[in-house]
Length: 310
Image: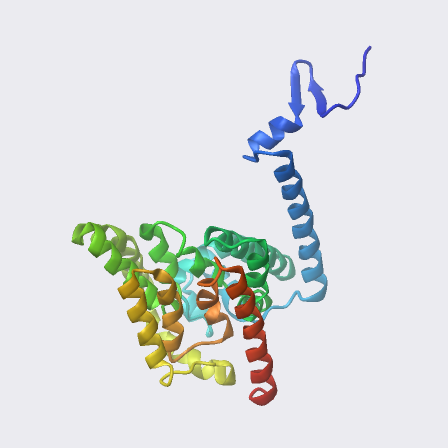
């Protein structure tokens, strides 16, 4: 019997041969280098999972808000009635449910890994090169989101998805995105007309109306967000209004969404550190600007913690 030798093929059954090229093709990877990269990223993800599970299994937003709210939704209960601190759009909980039903440390650690992967995916789609991608993920707002177990990557998905779906994600946290939402609506009106606006808006509108029917006037609960955040509410409203308006004006004048991605945070009375993720992501396609923003965000946050948060 000829046992053969390893030459990139492994004999599984008679007449059934699996090759490295076949595996690569099934995974949609074009070159061996991409296959190796995917393998290394998988190993990195596993390592990050175990590090987070061992060193930082507790995440404040995950523990007090998103996990219990997702469990409540899975049990057919109102997340707003069951979880005092939950104030976000209820459809944001649907992707969280599989993670929330796991033991808390495992679900939180998996969510951390998935969040990094999704931030990287969004950054890549926004045009970030490798160094800019690292700077995006390491920036203070996104690092803060990862630390506390929040969901900002869902919001950022709204910038890269078709508007019919993207608006659903952007509506999860309107305090960070309302100018961008308005920009998308106006741009579609300009280019394709009123009927197109109805096409892109109705899924989000229908979802919003359904949530009001199921859970009542849940958006009013957002009033507790600013008092609960306390000194961690770093909004510069109303002083930031002129900056926000100038950014919005530039977005509509130049027909460029990037200033709109930054404008909302200057116009909102409630802005915690991770709320600036959308503004930071607007610089993703420029390596120099993204690295500068990353470093600047940490300088700001360190100074703020030393001088304000004691």
